Length: 124
Length: 124
DNA sequence: GCTTGACCTGGAGTGCACTCCAGGTGCCAC
DNA sequence: GTGGCACCTGGAGTGCACTCCAGGTCAAGC
Image (cartoon, rainbow over the protein chains, first blue to last red):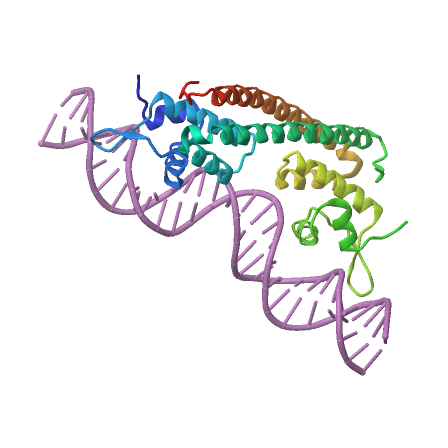
């Protein structure tokens, strides 16, 4: 069982040190251990959870939703089903996002063809 | 050749009336016609361009980049090649976005399995 | 001619997610 | 034991993309 300094965690997760502090402040991270001197000491579990947060952020989950998820984590076994539901619902949103992007990409490529034409027509 | 009121354009493009005014103010839209009384009167060409903007926004192009694109439109035929390049570069970013989403979705689904397990392990 | 509702302007305010700052502390190396 | 760097805190500031507001104007219907 090893521990990591804020700088190491920033390196490993891609969150800035300020963001890590911010997440703790707003309650996204609430059990970060401290050294006797008061410095943060992140565990492997913290790291794993931060990687989940990273994934959720990168797929555009709002912080408010991540907070609700953290609440469910506090609920322990009783909330397991709900936690899984939250993630599954998010997974569906990601699927939807991808579909939307594909659709917009199709449109974009059409525009590229239009704009490639010698006379820049206002059409379509 | 028909014209559209701000409300109609909002309806057709999904941009709010305030956003349409904002886009004009910052120079994204610069040739919107007016009635003798001073009301905006959007043309079919405006509508087509707004649909392109919609597509670019929905694929996360920053407004600053859209402004650069509009500059290139002003450049006329001389800038056609550059315009197309901007769109193509954006198309590649969209491709990249989709790939990232897929990767994150893969991870998310893995987490869903982990969190589905009866004992909420801190692992992975 | 008056009401009403959509529209106009410039400018201020909002929400989100950080990011930065000042002033101070812990700790390792020399 | 002291220099220096990573770290601490609370709170202020930032950037983006809108969104809202007050106070006024246009125009269609009665």
